[in-house]
Image (cartoon, rainbow, N blue to C red; front, top):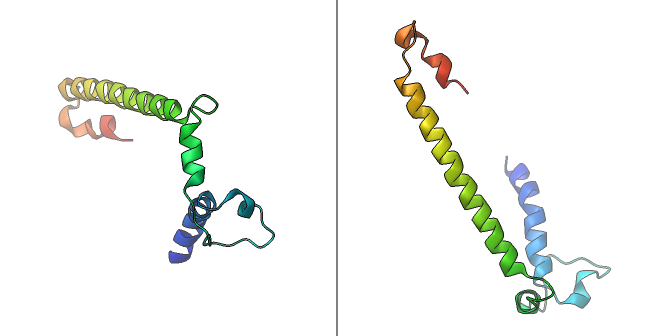
Length: 102
């Protein structure tokens, strides 16, 4: 299980490591996990060039869509759960497991 976790987290660790490298070391012949001159210049460049690459706007759009969908699903699921809770069937509670199965 530890091997599986390491295999799953290795691409994320490589992505973070690469984001902290200066541009000339990203495509070097010898890949290194830990960047020797670690720098945040890639992030400052990313967030300061808003007219060419509007990352802040994209993050806001993703947050808005995911929040809206979450509340919509919560509303629909809760109204459906209320309807199923009030539903009376011929079998009574003996067959109520049928409605709640996934």
